[in-house]
Image (cartoon, rainbow, N blue to C red; front, side, top):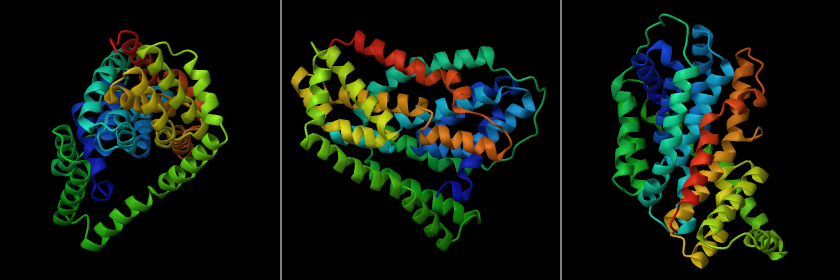
Length: 341
């Protein structure tokens, strides 16, 4: 709905207007991170940014796969940290923890990975173009994103936050002539129906998960994973492995969390792991593998968009340049290793 009133374009153009051309790859990572955090959707972020990122790479002589890697990495940063993303909501609901508590744990894990990613992109992702065409934007169209971020961070209920974001974006769109009351209602409806696939997948995978549990499949998997659990640290590694395997099997990080969540909660209670930590492990590792697997929606959207723009890029061209997901995995494992729990 914010895209319908020009909010996405305004946010992207604002970022590109203040970022020097030599820092384009790092700038795209930052823009994708902000957009992903504000919208809570990595696929939506990639869909909006990839055409621009490919054009920027062409203008500045940069590697297209590297620009795509920066875009996907930033989008997964936002998906993992956003308080309104479906993964965050699923992780916190299954573990019974407040959104802001999970955010605090995740932030200190994601920040080092993001900073190192920025450093790497600043070193190897510099563009050659001297100037770029100026980009116009209306700053007020960025405000709904900023408002949603602020409300989420200070702990306002997620449904109230989203409602305020929806109607503030609609009001701005109507006042600026980008929307009417009817097109605003249609945009909200399109956004709702766009989530129907996730709803049905969650229902089907929940049913499959229960069938697997009924036939002993989950018990078998837990027994295999619990053989390596000797305490809080190894139990957290087991949670990470469980949600990672579920994501690789379903190619949907939200569904993976829904499947692994109840088991992770039991393990957390048994080994005295705080709910905010178990929620963080589920969200983080599901996002790591969702951003890397070549058959995930994020990768497929990036590749198909490139194909429509005339660039034949494969997932295996992008995967080695996904600096952020790999660094996030390393950061997460180090935090588990040195976790006092």
